[in-house]
Image 1 (tube, rainbow, N blue to C red):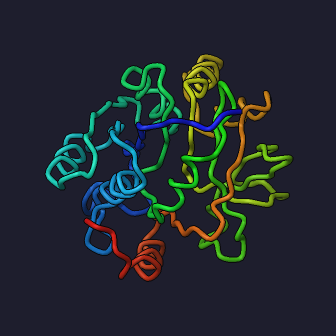
Image 2: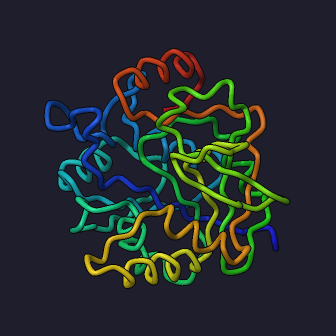
Length: 248
């Protein structure tokens, strides 16, 4: 493994956000948390940590999401990739960024998370397996909000041994932040081509790399984050993060 030199972040902002009832308000990536849209907060944090450019994958209400991000003075230069199959699993959104990413290494983030910039700063120094990825994980299990919805991770010797929402035996939680090589695209493409409907989830690709010993973990330590997936999570995120200096 070597320490990555990564300047690019891919942000997934294509899904419906049904648990937040996006049809009744702004698309989920534009949902304001403490006065700043979720997707813009993600870009703010990566810029603060030192990233230089972003690819945002859009799908559901994509024109609105793009316009909202562009008008919100994003902290990074942004290119947009369209996922026309946004109704399917999120692995297809990652694959939609492949052409713009090329052979570069990249960070990967969901657009509906809020987090400390320290999580990215730590991930920037974490070793990444050649052809694989490193997932930022949280071992503070007693502090996880809505554990039922969290993606659980079982680790062994600094690697992912298993990952799933319904995992019974786990010692960490997936924060939704990754440092990746293009090997993730290869794993997702194989997973997609193995199914008649061409669908695949991000976890499918992570599990495929884990089976090859190519999925490492990085402990976020005391760093804070929150998946904003429900109205209750919005309230919780604002309680935890409101009052911090976000810059924008």
